[in-house]
Length: 443
Ligand code: TRP
Ligand code: ZN
Ligand code: CA
Image 1 (cartoon, rainbow, N blue to C red):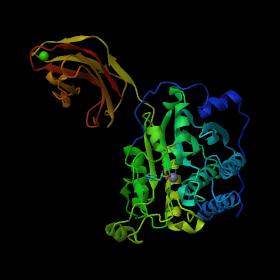
Image 2 (tube, helix red, strand yellow):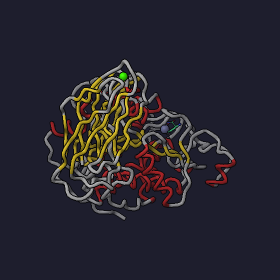
Image 3 (cartoon, protein in one colour):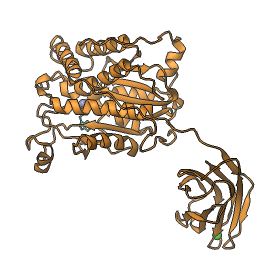
């Protein structure tokens, strides 16, 4: 079936395109981005469509034809690689994505990454999914990694068919020269200015998702991203395990190395399935993919069930994470007056008066604590609600570390919001001293 593609405004100024794809500018020093803020069960997320297996398989058949027409492979520096890039790019361009081909040089030949941005969403919250598009020279690379490439391609096309208006900005990436050491993804990340890196709230990697003798492995890096995949598989009754066949062996490592939260799926490479895993998933106690990095990694080496489930899981993750609505932060009350903390002495407090907030405090009351002190192991820190209820935030842990500069999340849903809230601090051991620098509540 030939589905019609909704058209979107694509008249975007060249400079905007550069800013959106994050490809502008030169390499900046690695700076860890701010912490992942997506909640475990994102509010307001839309349900993903079923990804048609036939479409994903057609992409694999097309990649197989490309390999066959180009000496049997789609490897870096070979004609089959560039033909693969052109094939994926044409589909995305026709679907209304803003695509960018990024070139690099490796082993004396030109390599290519393809970046596809879906117009819209919050440019400061970018959700990325990626897959390496290159094969090894010994075969057409249909499971490794036509499968991940086709899975994210069909998910991107489904985004277009749905004319999805996500809350996050969606970006898809197809990486070159992964098989030669994650070269393309490293090049992308290294050329991303730190301001652009910090906007990426998560990177999802799909490298080998249709191994013939499949296992269902989920990367255990970022808990939110891991949880979204685990929930999907729990919902369809398929047990998963944590991916352990070589952490850092695919492109997510390039993102993880600069502090970007990562997740992903994997069905296994040359490792042998255990008898316990055969019990769990079926198949045989042989390699997950007996054609790994071989000439037999063709369309015949693909497990349709695994390809179908994992493609649906990709869409589930993009929809769940990409369309979640994070409620805007409520009013903030702050006291920035310094309060000195007597050494090994009585407790002191800093107060804020909350007014104009009706009802109870939230289950996720954010308590911003800024205490300057030379030995945090001396300190007991409590939040005191207007009715005197005590919530302990810190109890002499952390030893000789300096300062407590932290935002605690407190379930204060049983407290009336209005009234005087206190941060109480007591220094319980001699010698080291300090002061409360500020105390802040965000409702
Ligand atoms: N990236 C490897 C390849 O392309 C395959 C691989 C091995 C892998 N271990 C992994 C992929 C763990 C993802 C996770 O040849
Ligand atoms: Zn691979
Ligand atoms: Ca002290």
